Figure (cartoon, rainbow, N blue to C red):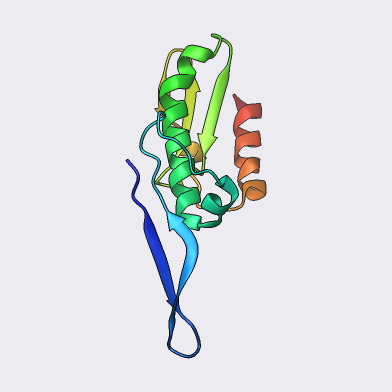
Length: 119
């Protein structure tokens, strides 16, 4: 499903000007992505929607691609940015001890390092 919006902003003179940023939502893995991905991802909401779609898609498709000894942990890209998910061949489950309000990946990675060395 694609939802597209044209954004309009008022300039300093009170006149509206149209921005070239469209808002689209990726709703299916079969959906064709916008031709100019850089422009598409320039809209922060598009980036959030794209990340969430990718993380949800990986949560359903990755277990089959992993070997029994592999574990993939995803965080920060879901609709709930605090959410962290562990994916193995056997299961997909939330990892509450890795839930975090840290927005920056370089800060958040320390939680994942601590978790991996204490397992």
